[in-house]
Amino acid sequence: MPQRRPALPPPEGARAERTLSTGHGGEVVVVVRETTRLVVKRPSPRLRDDPSGQALHAVEARALARLGGHGAPRLVESGHDAFGPYLLMSYVEGTRLDELEHAPERFEALAATTFEALASLHARGIVHGDVRPENLIVGAFPTFVDFAFARLDDEPTPPGPFRGTLAFAAPEVARDGPSGSTGASDVFALALALAAHAGIVLRPSLPPPALLVHAVEAKVEREHLERLARGLGAAVAHEPSERPSAAELARRLRR
View 1 (tube, rainbow, N blue to C red):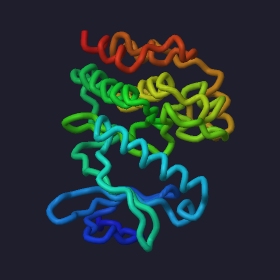
View 2: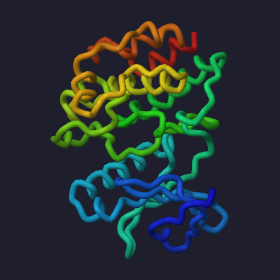
View 3: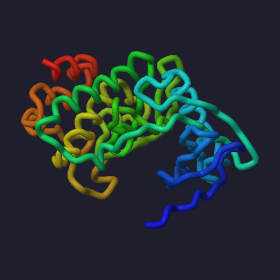
View 4: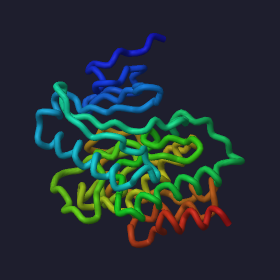
């Protein structure tokens, strides 16, 4: 299958290699600068010229800068050229969780390492805000990508309706929007993402308005998760205060 050509050129000094993803939010392209493989992310023209889109780009830049490569790509450069703003990040070798083959005998180890990676975000005051299989790369170490909906613990919460992915959203995020996004909601979303990786879909396929109501009101059956890994069911408690932290879940899964 032919590679998609990037819609926008890479930053100066870099050569485009292939497009990883493109959509309404922007374009992510693998580039080579000198001999180093990197990833560049640019917002779409629609978001580039919109204040809310500019804010999402800026939040992602600040989140990546704070994380310093812990559980996330390392931010190499945040810049602006004739084609708009861009983020230049380290290239992460690995496979997206939604494309990774499920291996039951390795599931607990996978779950433990992904919760450890999530804990590293939370330890640095970052809530991801949109944990889903497409946003987790499994390689030598699990790495979260796409921090446009991240929350930083020392910044005010932006007002607004729900944003993210309803299939994996915690009830409080579906109900309250960005103000409901916390470490506990990341834990909930990662548990559902891991279940989806194992072929267990815990949210029905519904039109968005109906799925939003379902996400707010319906409790996820913990038994499905407990069958995958003992202790994982606690991650989907309906009340966020009843969920273990990412670090605690990682410890339980290592026992």
